[in-house]
Length: 299
Figure (tube, rainbow, N blue to C red):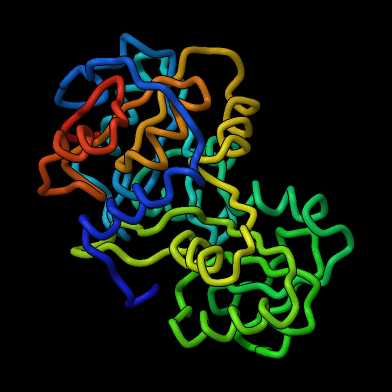
């Protein structure tokens, strides 16, 4: 994983700066305050669950989350994980959740990696892609011509397009190299994880979305973003879950809550874990104007 981190205030301020690049939504609700998802479950047919900050923080399950999912299932609630983690395949994500104690099936996991992969041909038909990825990624799940750009840096210059899957090995020096390559020859860039940061044990690591918006600022070329808060991610979930009154559950206002609202879902913010852990979340809600339907202390 990346060793580069941001703090909460810097992350929030950057999301606010990006307002015009994010989906638009109107917020006219007064949030319900509750302890857990069980306390708001009667309002919804099911839940679309962020992973980091809702189910786990890094490689640690959130206390009580495994048991909560079981109780929600017993109440007849439909569940689906919508994750912006694009470093690994959907099957690997499902396997990770099982290691943490969850019982999600592969069909109950939708990843931004899959969503991005499904759009590559439309973005750049027949392209040779330079991929920014985790070490050892073999791209077996992605139907495209891909080269690991960090193993073959010249690929950044000769490829027809760039796919950003993981920031685990990315650094400011690599970013400068990518900016130079795109200035020399502008090409499509796909960001498969729009998050600026991810909550891990004791820190917020910088994610591909941070670098994608930095590219836009420095090159004037807007990448194609796939994952929350953008619409294709939520449409993929709704196609999977079918008709119903669902709520997006997340820890981040500008991705989970904004994106969920823009997609017509209910929204639930988890306050005690993830991005706003230890913070006065009400202050950030006031400043952003992004108001969830409910705020729960924990999953």
